[in-house]
Length: 114
Length: 109
Image 1 (cartoon, chains in turn cyan, brown):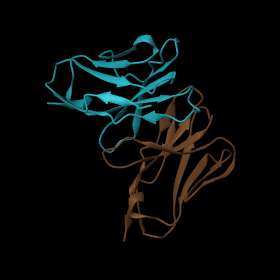
Image 2 (image 1 turned 120 degrees about the horizontal axis):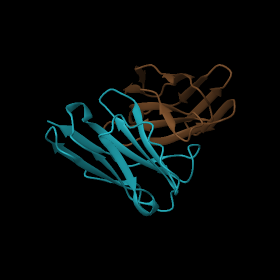
Image 3 (image 1 turned 90 degrees about the vertical axis):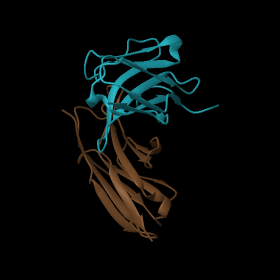
């Protein structure tokens, strides 16, 4: 089927507003990851979902960031009260299982906070 | 902490061979990945090494030495389309990958 999809592809928002980013993983993939990539930086792990287990939130940079995964499929990353330093590309990836499986990345959402 | 080092940028000529090195110091190790990322696009999987040695896949090969905390990606018969960033990532055993900052490879005619 289709690959990982993300929406929107671009989002421009004003400082202080909330944003929601969506990820549709590949069907049948039980693991889902969110990463952030700032200009000139490596991918920064944010959060990991595996099946019905409690998510690994250890990479979330502050309590303004949260994510959920409904029905083991679609995931939403929410950033509250956005700040300019939140500007980055947010990438979602899914895989068949745990981290020793290849991760398939979506095209990303470019977030710009003005 | 987790530390993964790669050169920031490399240049090479079309048709040549280039080796991109990656050294790592992590709290755990359960495999190393290489991904390719063209500008403005998502990363795509290239290789996975969990045991020492060389894995060959067409023009691309990847090597791992766990005792040295070292890996390299070897690209042969370079083509212009190989101009991209190459990301080294370590599975630290905690069900997530830690990525290096990537090596930007520029291939010239």
